[in-house]
Amino acid sequence: MAFEVKLSAVPVDRNMAGALHDLLPIEIGMFGGSGNYDSKVIENPIEVKVFTPYGAPSDNFVLGTVKERTFAFLARHGRTHTIPPHAINYRANIWAMKALGVKRILSPAAAGSLQPQKIKLGEFVIADQLFDRTYGVRKDTFFDGGTIAHLPFAEPFCPELRRIAAETANEIGYKVHDRGTYVCINGPRFSTRAESMFFHNQGWDVIGMTAFPEAALAREAGICFVNISMPTDYDVHGDEVVTHELVLKTMAKNVKRVRKLTFEMIARIPKDAGCDCQTAMQHGLF
Image 1: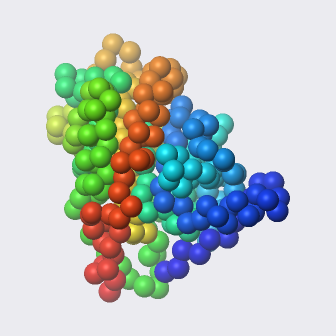
Image 2: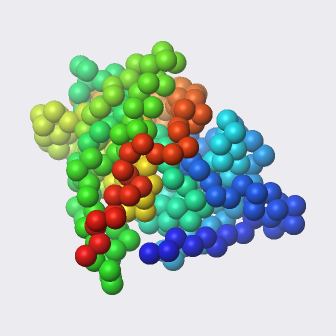
């Protein structure tokens, strides 16, 4: 499976095209989630449109450098937040990242805390496990015809990036939980009380709508992937039942902290991976 890149600078400009050529391949990518669309920290940014076999990604990419590392930013829901979680073209987004050369993806995202006594709003959860409740309606593989492949996925998130995220948060002074189970629901609706209590009683930690199939597709593509959840609500366990307005309101209060954590991580990511995420599919083809 060849992840070939076809892209154009926006707008097309000879100088911009030369600068783009000098940037590639990109090392590190990031998905900007709800309330986190600001890519101003990128030095010498270039906006590009990436073409994929699966159609258009969520938006144009912003490429440049951060802390002397080549970097790609994509607004997961589009920069004006017009794409709901269930309608995101996850395959196009991951394919485009891979085609640009990306080897590591940082994925900060708003989430709900399923354990209010332990995980408070504004804290960070670096998930180590994933429970999929999207009911199989999302396209979650690049191998859906022709070559047969089975993805090893017991540990869905990159252990090296998880460690770096937790260590960085601790050093900055942020409250962080270095592990937790992320429950991914299909959306766009939020959970019923019965569903939320079921997840809570299972002992799972946070709930969101985007980590799956992002994590699985990234692993198939040989990209390290880390989920950085920031709880913006208590799902249905608090006095105020979760709404989209509440999520954005809470995220707006904490978005600077999310940006500081993710961008402080970048310089700490080693050039060569010390995990097996990027080679996971070597024995997955049948």
